[in-house]
Length: 122
Image 1 (spheres, rainbow, N blue to C red):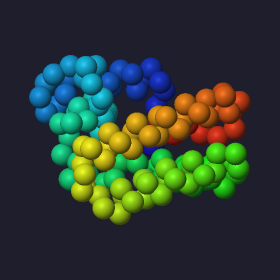
Image 2: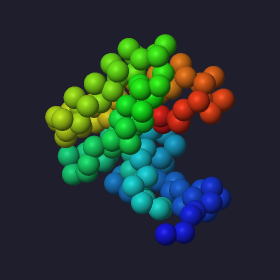
Image 3: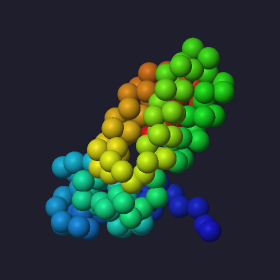
Image 4: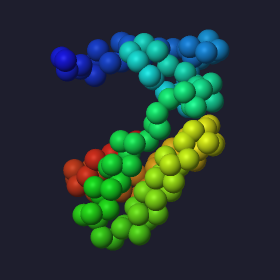
């Protein structure tokens, strides 16, 4: 598979929701294929794999090397693992909760990420 540049990826970003046809910019949305996207609340989450598995793996890697934040990383990792075990129960609410908690934790890591200490979560 050939690598895709940022410009090529941007060219595939849709403007409207595949389900409702409404503009994507108005609320959180997910791209599930090049040129295909749905608002977070429009997506039938019960029909798709857990969307935060990659984040869960990243949190596990971070937890092994980041002592000062270890308790916080472990807490969120356990929370995501619990959501994954019960998936798709909770659907939209689980997705919104996980996304918000990941963003809050990532905000605490901004300085370390700028120095390349570990990968972005979101």
